[in-house]
Image (cartoon, rainbow, N blue to C red; front, side, top):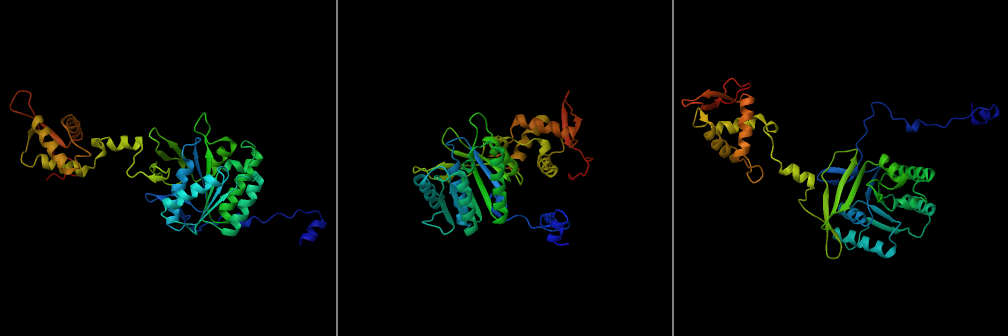
Length: 347
């Protein structure tokens, strides 16, 4: 039956949705990464991301630094600015090129859309993407694609456009948005919907010494350690090497518990401790253990001290690495290796 015959007898012709079907046993490749940190992919093609912060916290600076890293790898980028205007937009573009050690780049285009209406911005972005097919798109001021950030219909329309653009043009879109003044949530209904759709949301904040801190707030992929940027005298952001977040610093500086150390390491330490003696009293064990432990680790990072060695001795007795024997003196306790320890490697 053709469409004309169906219309004549009053039947509705259903659209063909077969192109949306994901076939079974289909081996699809992973999305192509366009930006990584320490080997962990943050941004991939056909996906959205969100960068959010309070006003003047360094959102644009943080994204400018990331875009500069992409230019070094010859990733094509289009930046749409809806807020700054030509002067400040030109400065941001200069920062990007300076960070990438470039005078100019054929892989970067920067557009100032400040004077357009929300609908005109959507049309302009659509046409520019169609003509250029970039790999990465930055929308610095995604809020300005709607006239009301809480209008559900407008927000739905923008989200639909964003998801169609990444799919149709095989790109990644970084959306920059303000946080609420009263909390850490992205602003409005638009922020809520973006949080639901992005592959990663990054939080940007400035600390007391004017460092720009970038950390993951949510991610569909592998988690990554946050990183920090400083600013040169000219205001140009640069990566602070070997920076650790306060949480990571606490974890790094925290010494491992006996239960967190491999069996083989315990065996190696105890073999050194009892290398010359069959039995040791508590005082001698502590002395020998501290020397043996520190000889097998980087003592500047994980140094064994007397108070901590007592915790290890209790662990060895509890887990039957060591046996207790009575000494010749009253109430003296001697420690020796337990030959019946499961998977014994002491012999």
